[in-house]
Amino acid sequence: DTAVSQTPKYLVTQMGNDKSIKCEQNLGHDTMYWYKQDSKKFLKIMFSYNNKELIINETVPNRFSPKSPDKAHLNLHINSLELGDSAVYFCASSPPLGRQETQYFGPGTRLLVL
Amino acid sequence: AQTVTQSQPEMSVQEAETVTLSCTYDTSESDYYLFWYKQPPSRQMILVIRQEAYKQQNATENRFSVNFQKAAKSFSLKISDSQLGDAAMYFCAYRTIFGNEKLTFGTGTRLTIIP
Image (cartoon, rainbow over all chains, first blue to last red):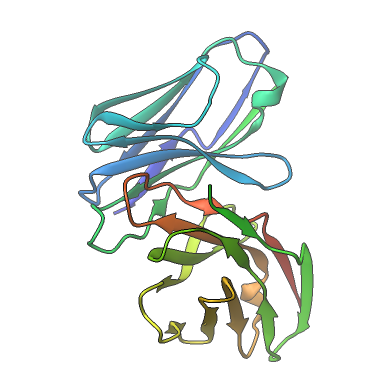
């Protein structure tokens, strides 16, 4: 009965590869997010989708492409991985504004680019 | 743009004592939400407490309470009767109520509990 799940939890890959991280939520929420946590633990929004539509894209390189096949899923595809992409990536979801505005986070995916 | 500042990179407290973590923020909005999230070594982001800016009453959740000073744009977290399981990174976060729903995080405070 996991609320927000991500796969994989760990990802080790070589520079230049393409990889995907998957996120699923079973909370019935309309909005999903991707956040990046860097090596100094700083968390920053990358993308947000509401009912499969992109609503936030925070100056992320276009090597990163989110895809939302339905409102319960938000995947993150990264092309041509670079060393600086090493980080922990968190997926989150929230209900519509006005109904308990808390964001619920997945367990994170630690990406290491060698 | 909103900013969130946590001026204490690290804090420590004796077990069973009380500790207060500081957070200030900058916004031109009159209504918004504020949160404290906890990130233990497991890396999971766990909501500790939330506060709606239109509510004057400070939020409390068991041993956790906030001191929300809207005019000063201050939102501190008080942990009473500290326990070993409270050891974690604590992040303060801001969220607007209009449009863009992202959380803006502070840089975090690492809390150590001394047995």
